[in-house]
Every structure is written in structure tokens, then in C-alpha cells.
Image 1 (cartoon, one colour):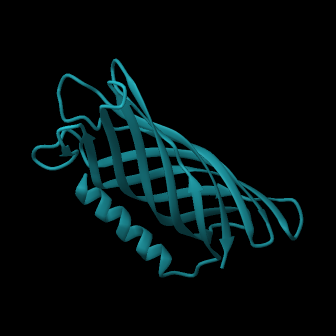
Image 2 (cartoon, rainbow, N blue to C red):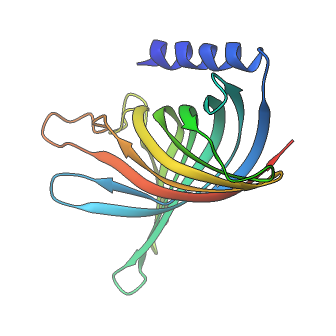
Length: 197
């Protein structure tokens, strides 16, 4: 999976080196749900990123980009005696096929769909009690999670001149739990705004 991520990143770089039709920077709200066999956890999420659009035909195109994403979750137990904070940082590489429904010269509606490969950079749970605090790493030899995930992404972008508003949903296909007895997947919606450079 690591090799697949590197290959996809290389493809994105090769696209970016070509003749780009549009480049967009954006920020978004990206909450995520971690679902296992018997439970689920909801995380608040935020992202910043960019993408580069390439026209395949007059209406059909491909958007290639990269984004930095962060998931966060805090809980309290035993009347506040135990406080837990989860933090995860991720780099995503989406390659999305899109179709432009041009309303006029200034307004466009563009549905998109495609894969997004994700690499978990950091994952940590900090547990605080009256005695002290303990940090647990999600990844590595002693961690319980795999770093790599493959998403299916679908959504739509609405643009007025250089201003963009987008929304959609992402489905995680891979089991992220290292255990053979537990299956864990992730999914979530996203909304955001962007500006064409």
C-alpha cells in the first residue's frame, strides 16, 4: 500500500507539471466516523488543500490534488476524572473525474467522483487522570491502526467566477484495524470553500 501511495503521488505530480486549466486552494469541514463491529466514534475534522484541473474534453475533466486533514475527538469520564483526547493528521491525494454543467460564463456546477488515497501521518490518544497523563500512538509496531486507506469520493462543486463552494461524501474501503478479530472503516461528509488562482 505504501508503494501504491507513492505511485499515486507521482501521478499527481506528473499531472501538475502539465498544462493546468485551473488551480484552486480550499479549506473545509471534514468530520469522520470510525466504525467497528460493535461501536462507532465521531471525530471533528478540518482540511486545507489544493487541486489542479485538467480538461479532457470541453465538459469532462480530471482534478488532481493534495490536502492536509486533521481529526479530533475529546471525551470525559468518571465525572471528569478521566479526560481523553484523540488527534490524527492525514495527507490525502484525490484524483477525481468531473463533468462541468456550465450555467453561463460565470456560474458552473461540477459533479465529481473518484478515488482518494490517504496516508496517516500521526495518530495519538492522550489520557489524563489525577495521577498523570499517558500518550498512546495509533501507528507503528505497538499501534493498533494501519496508516493507509483508500476512499471513494463523490460530490459536487458550485462556482461563481473564482469563488467555489463544494460538498460531498467519502467512503473508506480498507480495514484499518490490525487485529484479525476487529474490522474498522472510516467515512464522512465534507463541505468547504475554495478560490481559483
